[in-house]
Image (cartoon, rainbow, N blue to C red; front, side, top):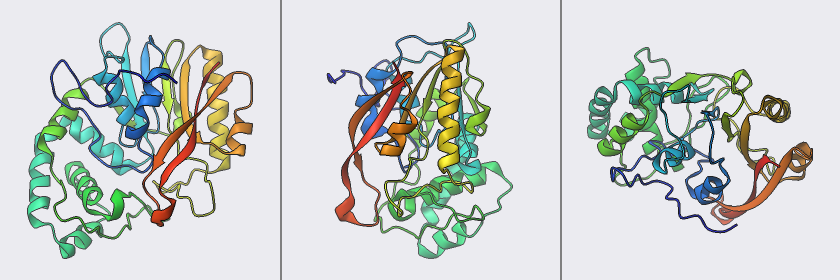
Length: 291
């Protein structure tokens, strides 16, 4: 595909970056130059039901491909991970309180503090929950958010010398970008997109092998969920909605999206999170759109 001149992270009108505030496994910052040219040029509302770090959402905003204005337009962001959704909501609504708490975490950061905060799985205050997620994400091994069967975060501390626990400017830029945006904890199957809306799906990928990781929240994402997503895309097509999907380039996914409705685009994407350094590097992935 011809290289796009779109900038993945920079808003030329303000000079302020709007970029993910967490490092999320499967994040799309490195794939934006493949994704942005394939986005529809005109659409009504935008939906992203596997939000993660939101790199594609921010890129759409920064490149003025998404305009959250009146006339029924809007952005609807969702994810199944309750801690992640709470963090997005807090950045939208209470960013200054969040920044103050993150400053405290940064000042107190050490090994004992990390494991003490990691063990606090049941925080009632949403600002404390948001600050905990960001702090752990910035200081844990490889920036990996992983939970056990009880939904408890269980990643060991990383070896960063000076982790950027509180990036005030970036958090405030995210806050500005999220004004007027609907953010909810919601299963992807509850999506309400309709005619002329655009949906970007970035689900947990179909595993390449038995060691691949798919548990970002308490509920895993398996074959039944992959098939439900394919069926939802067919229903969206019937409603007149537009969509784009990222997933593994496997025989299973190719067969799953073999109907004439779908166009499959093979792209190269870097894979940076793997327990074996020798298996990090560029891999083939699929971007799936409407024919």
